[in-house]
Image (cartoon, rainbow, N blue to C red):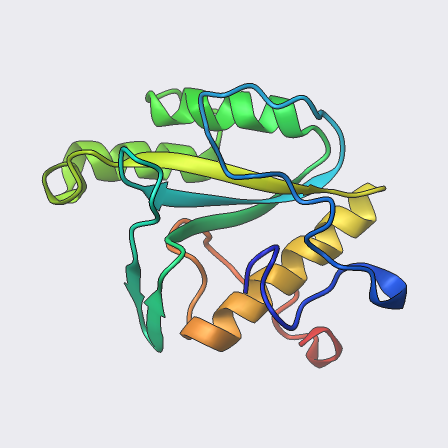
Length: 161
């Protein structure tokens, strides 16, 4: 689902997954955190309202474009922002740049912007595990990975579903 979605809690002992999750912010806004995290990127209008995305099994009302993990959130945000401007430093952002340049994205969503939010985590292993769980929850709900993700982590490991 999402970092604050129902049914997913990356924290042991019932701690709320959303307690430490950042607020949605535009990708050009600096992040004050630069360590391990799982994150989401979404499509929004100029007012910051999510643009729904039709998926195989339903509509993603939150407009999630990608789910990822990082060991340095501010570094990742800078790479994402740079990739959106055409620099090939972040694969998902570069794909989005190519879609903007060579598809109907620019005409269909003229006032589109991108936001991200993240969940600070204690280690690379936690970040990877959280990313995997978030992607799998998304796949279970919508029948496919978010538009800019290319694969399901450990998809053949039944114990992680």
